[in-house]
Amino acid sequence: MSSDTAATKFLTRQQAADVLSMKPSYLAMLFREKRGPRATKFGPADRSPVRYYLADVLAWGTDPVAHEAAAWGKRAVRNTRRQKAGR
Image 1 (cartoon, rainbow, N blue to C red):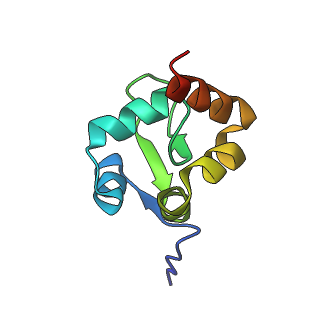
Image 2 (image 1 turned 90 degrees about the vertical axis):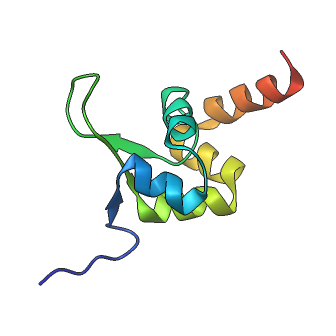
């Protein structure tokens, strides 16, 4: 018996991008910069698949700055503010 709730359901990058109405390549760039919805890499290799929790994707879509601070730490948010300021 399987119960897929938003807290435990994993999405591929394509599925997460579809939920957020953005391109998967943009989501990949956010992941590399430790921004965007929190993601988990399944394996040690560079080409290991990346998966997103549905709950994290929905939370990031609602309030990106607050979610990034919680998921990636204050450093990621500080870097985002610097980029917006052009520094």
